[in-house]
Length: 168
Length: 168
DNA sequence: TTGACTGCAAATTGTTTGCATCATG
DNA sequence: CATGATGCAAACAATTTGCAGTCAA
Picture 1 (cartoon, rainbow over the protein chains, first blue to last red):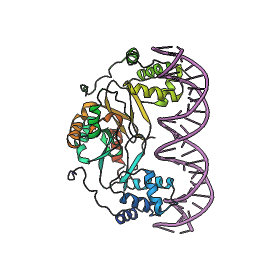
Picture 2: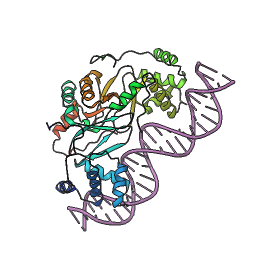
Picture 3: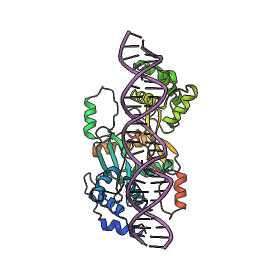
């Protein structure tokens, strides 16, 4: 098990060159679009970028790259194992480099994303495998709930109907 | 948190009448559409119905009920706390009566849904609250992974590129 | 009676696809 | 040079919304 990261750990440094080398090794064509997407992801650090975010970023350097191409690039990069995408909430997916598996918690009130190290889930994963034969791959969906702040606030407003309005 | 159900509990029997009484108590109008949606959900038992499934079911008795109305009914029933919806995978949401909180595991290969009792998560929930101040509300998203069968199969095919193709 | 609910059509959002063209390996 | 990648427009699926008519309380 990797050493448990603390919240706020710096993202593991992976260079664009490494990623491109990896593509070459996998016999996956290194195209401008793919390079641009990877660049945007590397520059994005550990942030959570939607396809549209990535398109905006990519298009600063390559204005002609179409959103559809972004999606296709992401697909191939994901198939290659360089990229992961996660669903943070109703619909939109976000992408990040796959080199450091982590789980996401999203606050359904304010949209804050908390990253937690993978091993927090190891116990649950073991339980589920034992009891249900099910192997979770938890990275693909965020866990939804309330961040510290919003939970506190919710306490305060206690009594008002709890209508969940996740940021859309 | 309500008292945790035991693993394997039968779904608590809730009658249409109870649900409608609840609506009345909450001063929420009892309309044909809402009754029909509740009926479909009750009849559906513990299955996971999409809005379209529900529309089909509802429309057998009330053919004029529009899908948009199904969505609006579900919204109000959910706001009232009678219904929950969960995202099982890319996009589509499924609805069920809210009387028995449980977590969903979805196999990303075959789409099988496994329900697990809430209390399997209590430990994780405690950990996350302690370490991150985050209160998970896990019902809203399914945990994705591989069911026993598909995990086995994946073992067999080991070596082939793992391209995730969740049933869409 | 009246405000909440409904039907319908049309808009939105996020993502995918067909096809002709282009460029990597 | 062949295959796979791209740009574009158009298709898609799931969900939401504006509006005018209808109905539960």
